[in-house]
Image (cartoon, rainbow, N blue to C red):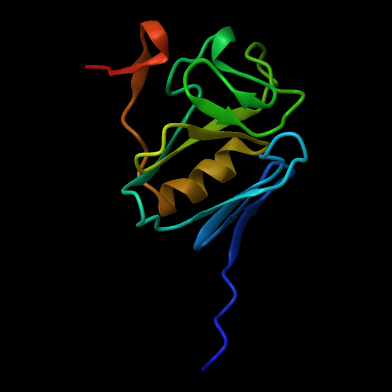
Length: 139
């Protein structure tokens, strides 16, 4: 059997590594900070897609430095994540099929990360938060 070819690393920063066939979200699991690997394409539970915290219009209550937020996003560790100010990192939110919690992480270079993700995954339609942390499609 021939060895499997190594996947190409397309984007890398202190929060995430994006390869041609998977993502590695760093410092994901609480409390030890183990990484979360997500295969591309994700076929076990349906669709894999992404959006950003800005696309979703997140407010102060929608972010967390690490762990579960009120809107069913599990955020990987970023002690500098903050909702205000122009110098903040962009948050990427990955929806994995029918899983209850979406996966959130920061990126240092939003332009480069979004370019790579847009080539690999569909971008979720713009949605806006409504009461109870649920999302409603914008029209």
